[in-house]
Image 1 (tube, rainbow, N blue to C red):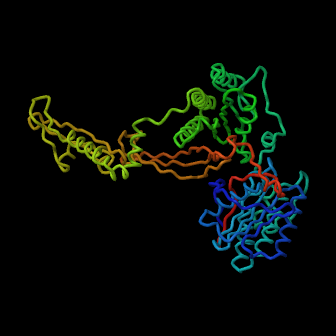
Image 2: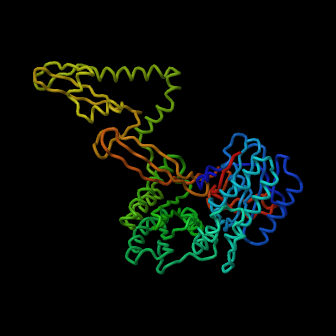
Length: 521
């Protein structure tokens, strides 16, 4: 069974959670009353044990929405799990779509390797046999047991029974926690954020920096504070655990100090072990895709520097967020904005009288390019060579640029002086940029999404670059900003939403970034 990425685009749903005392919703009409009672019994016993919460939803179709995104939206709308602990699991089935999802809460402690086995052996196998009731009840028992095993009190021995329904390799995995509990204590508000005296702008949760390094960062953060334009905090830690993720910690710290500050607050967070950097800025400073991308680029640049010099990497991000607080993020260059605007709206422009104007500009540009040239050496007119003849006067890199259509070269020849005048005309929309190794405009890049951003955590992308002329190849990752909530939602990303429908259910307000397992039959 294929386990999808740990974060997906969350789809807003309007499915009400089950009423208090119940844990399953059947919108298909295909689940028997007896099976619904069994599901309630399994989930009630799990909730009473304190190990987590389980929700079940069966629908006919997602109406075209991606099943993983739809199910994650339901999970977060219902709030499966306990707030802060995020120890919930949602079992979701879309019958007409023949799709199933298991969505894991961000702190539930169960791995996708375990839920892959449940999806394969309990959900998909039974649905292929047409036994919906068995698929739901058997999977629910296995998931409830996985939560009990993952969140068993310290000292409780594991037994072979803990492995039932979780696949052949899950017994060893069951005792493995992917959560840093000391750090989770800060997220849950159980532990106060450390402060140094005199007042410091550095929150070092793992004593990862020495006194000199902390002092250097303090000085940098003091500058923007002295201007009265904002406050910048550096959050530094070392951990190999996935949870809590760096974004949650940074947002929790920002929320902690934000209500005490009269000026905007930004946080530069770094996990030195994972070489990860997250920048959290006030929502009003990051309003569009350009600004979100600039934040992501700044974080990626700092992350690359962490391995060589952590302080230098943090200072780089500190300068970026300080400038953003004081002056805002630098706007998109006018030339690039015009180029993108032309590319986006050229169809509409040419469809109106504006096409005449653009056509005139194109004609004028063509005339400028083809106008007669005179040799400065002898004063005689130069001759424009044809495409076959001008290659003799171009370098190998220039020939490659022409072959990929990133640059078109004109060669004007003076036969008396045996001199070639080479003029280059770059294409606006070729998709090629200048190669850092050979300096030709022959570099292309492709982006692969490794982890999609959600409202609750940033994403991760891999950028693969290669040059069509030389041997240059490069791959790097960059983080993307988390998705902004709609204007109807709270602008403070850590604030959990509440509604009358959730308050009347048994769920406690847990969250998920979309981790888990998917299946189809």
